[in-house]
Length: 305
Ligand code: FDA
View 1 (cartoon, helix red, strand yellow):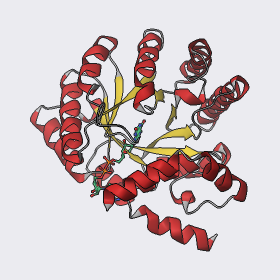
View 2 (cartoon, rainbow, N blue to C red):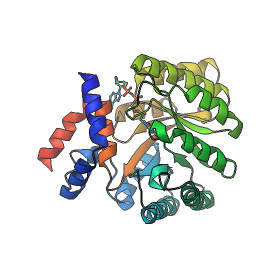
View 3 (spheres, rainbow, N blue to C red):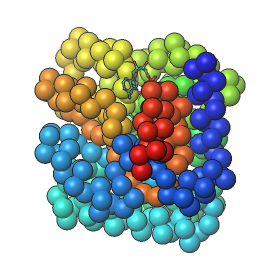
View 4 (cartoon, protein in one colour):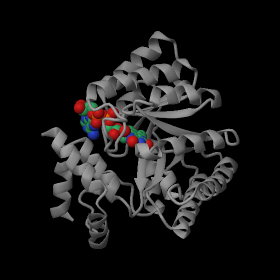
């Protein structure tokens, strides 16, 4: 049953017609519980509140799969405005972005040019940028671009997904550029040819990648809401005397709020991933796919807006 609902929502996440319908009729189906607003200005007070509680943030301007050059350039400008706002409001926040929103599906030169403009500004303002990882067909290109840019820009991170068979080898190949990595299970619908089909193997591989990246000496963001993964990390860092400055836990905005606070109290660094923007549909559907319990607040949202 769980697998059926997961596949159903992952299928819906790519449905262009429903995406247009959701945007046009403006119903947010409870998405406001997990999205920081439609504009960055709306997200600012929420970020300030999280910072006040001791939580760090990474913001993501929602949107992906852009196939028009002008739109990709507009999105790069939005990232730049966001970086400037973070600095001007002295927010404790990084920026996360998706390469397909900056032209990855159009051409490589465009996405590199957009990234360089963003990274110049980010470096000037002392803001770190993390490249999210999208579906497996974009993984190779994303990691190649990451390696190329990481040579020039220190303040750059990316994501590795434990459901992909390739990820262990990717960690080996990233080692030389001293990566700043966020490790996740992976959120897209993938075939058994490229990804572990069962949760047990995905979880096991995530633990393996966490251990490997931390023992390789690289800063690691453990991005999971799973108690088993969090507990594993806590034991691992204790066993290997790894100080809290070398890693952080990351969770999505609106998910496991109490756990975020508990980890802070225990002295760990915790960062909240806060998406904002009008393109909330695909992000929201992927979250429904991950956790059927989220459906309850989606249904409530339909009737209570
Ligand atoms: P998973 O969904 O496997 O759940 C395991 C268990 O954890 C559940 O059985 C439950 O007990 C508990 N749990 C999970 N969610 C809960 C909740 N909301 N409340 C209570 N208990 C809960 N993916 C990707 O492909 N590319 C990317 O760039 C990113 N980026 C990213 C950033 C950040 C900060 C996070 C947290 C996640 C991502 N992801 C991602 C998504 C990631 O790949 C993954 O799909 C989700 O985090 C879900 O996997 P989990 O490890 O959180 O737990």
